[in-house]
Image (cartoon, rainbow, N blue to C red):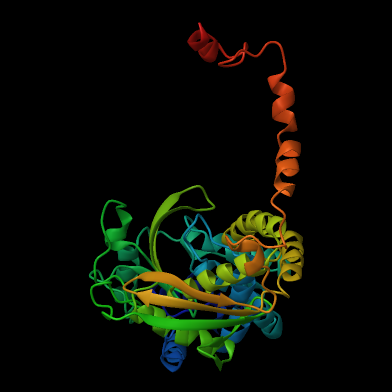
Amino acid sequence: MPEKVVLAYSGGLDTSIIIPWLKENYACDVIAFVGDVGQGDDLEAVVEKAYKTGASHVVVEDLREEFLTGYVFSALRAGAVYEHKYLLGTSLARPVIAKRQVETARRFGATAFAHGCTGKGNDQVRFELAYQALAPELKVIAPWREWELKSREDCLDYAEQRRIPVEASRAKIHSRDRNLWHLSHEGGELEDPNNPPLASTWMLTRSAQEAPDKEEEVTIGFEQGTPVSVNGMRLDPVSLVELLNEIGGRNAIGRVDLVENRFVGIKSRGCYETPGGTLLVTAHRELEALCLDRDLMHFKQQVALKYAELVYYGLWFTPLREALDAFINNTQPEITGSVSLSLYKGNVAITGRQSEYSLYHTDLAAFTMGDSYDQKDAAGFIRILGLPARSRARQPQQTNTGFAGDPARTEVAK
């Protein structure tokens, strides 16, 4: 019997030509696994195309809710943002797809996985680390690391020679990845970091010039750090993110142009559109500012950086990520309340935040002096904090203008 290979299939340029390539080079049965994470494709057309190009079976699974509740909202609660800008849309989708790909392989008795990731990118790492964590006994076939094709143009030639229909063309050469959380754009004019993105590159969000000339306000409700409502309307996770994508997109919210450090050591340039995610991250951060203890909030910011790295590097199925989630989840029970945002031509302003767990107390924060805070206490507090500085100031080697061990300061003193 021929070997069975489960391919992570999207129907895009790369995976469209991988099915015939696998059959030609491995003489195997190809099971195309399609994980619906909200990419917005015509799934019937994707299935039909997979069969026409040689797949023996096509498996389609709706992963949208699992993607949001098990992965995206975990990163949201963590506050995970990679290199200040990237909200990890592609990075978060890979583990949920890989996990179901593994389950499909076991169901069909497959002996190998395949994916369409290049040997330069992060996604090969994300998929394959997941495979190793969940099914280390199965082998991996990565066509981009084996075949003679060197570019997307070569892939187009391969598709044309075998009459494989693809949407990509030499005029539309961008590599894109879309899901419920974001849409990424790479290639084309973006390969030169000095080039601005073309107006036609953006697809989910309006430009600031095209956005309405009137502010729009949106209120997002959270329960234990998880978003549950928009403008007082309780929604399921998928509907909630879809609505916020629509609201943010029409107000030019969520565009990011980023030169990032890939895990493999290459600097790359990509443009990302995350309209709803930008609103959620902004609102969640404001609610934490209202409700979290200072030291806990500051330590959690450090955890967020590490969490973002783990997600970006493909280290989702690791004990460290699980342990960080345990810590993060312990910080979220009081992150319950609502945040109001005003949106205008790409700008997001905070117009209100409220929570029954708020640590903000007007009698303490106001300039009006009351009985709840004795200003005289501050004198002793400052004296204690200043004790190390006063002790050092009494050392004999210190001059009035600097320290004896500091040549620059000593010279100035002379």
